[in-house]
Image (cartoon, rainbow, N blue to C red; front, side, top):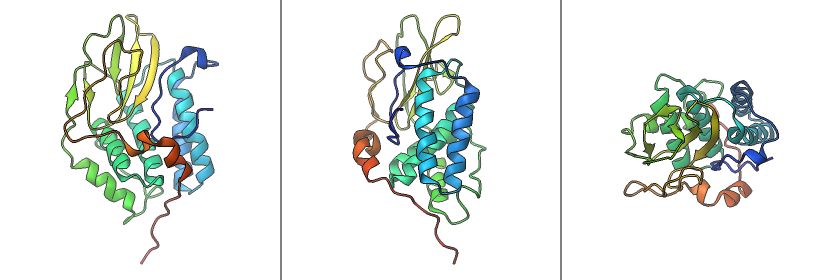
Length: 220
């Protein structure tokens, strides 16, 4: 399996996929990761989070904005457990831009939990600047399930390459400041002024080695 590297970027490699993955299978792993976080089961969260990133490059169906939002929310939980506040806020920002009505369930974070504060911080941020992906050859590239959206520079994104007929060719998660995947035939996208790659993306293995469980604060 792909190691659970928190804000790991994925690039679709068809040869690495033993079989196509359906959206239903991805949804099951995302839901299982959220449930494991709610029950504070670190090993289960780690396992299901890794399974999500095994599944992404092998998806056989298009990603919708709602699907991308759920991926970003699980990434926010992973970043939170790695004590990466910037990564948590960035992933929540991406999720909130796609699904602004979503509310953090009390099973994931009770009132007063620091995860709620980081979600609220993300919600009040302005929309991220975007850059045009430019010419992408024969591929139709979607950004978080949307066509012709441009890549956000200050938050992660799920990119997907479709054929002219709509068949899925590639899927990948790209962190803040990361270059575009090789299957997009253009140069690296610039980052917005003042932004930099996510801490967990720059030093994922180091962050994983120091992975810690952030428990909710005790009630007063």
